[in-house]
Length: 86
Length: 89
Image 1 (spheres, rainbow over the protein chains, first blue to last red):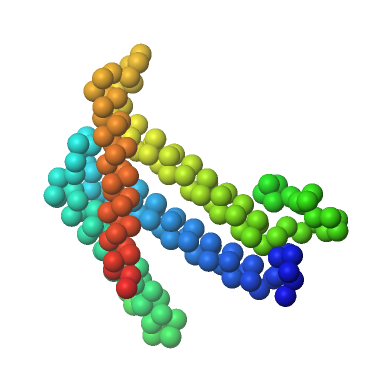
Image 2 (cartoon, rainbow over the protein chains, first blue to last red):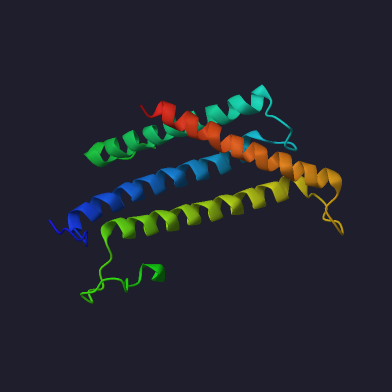
C-alpha cells in the first residue's frame, strides 16, 4: 500500500518468520553436526572420511530424526490421557 | 541490535526503515552470527582432536591435522545437511 516501502506489518512478519525458520534449521544442522562428529569421528581427522565414518554421519542424522518423531508421538499419546507408562 | 537504528535518509523524520533495507540488514546479521558460531565450533573441535599436548608452538603435524580437521568438519556439515533434508520430504 505504501509506495515508499516503509513498514508493512504483516509482510514484514512473514519475512521475519521465514528468516526465523531458516535460522532454526541452520541451528539444527550445526548442533547435529557437532553431536554426530563426536560420535563418529573418533580418531585424528584424515584427508578424507572412511566409508564407515561417512555412513556413521548419515545414520546419525537419520536416527536423530527417527528419535524426534518417536518422542513427539509418545508425548502426544501421553497428553491424550493415556497416562505415563513405567 | 543497534545497527537497526533509525535511518537518517527519510526526509519526513520518521524513524522507519524500508522493509527491504531492514530485511537485508537482518539477513546479514544472521549470516554473520551463524558464521561466527560455526567457526567457534570448528576451533573447539579441531583443538580437541589435534592439539593433545600443547607445546611452545604448533608442530607441522598439528598444523596439517588442523587443516584436515577443518576440511572434514565442513564436509561433515554437508553430509548431515543432505541426510536431514533428503529425509524431510
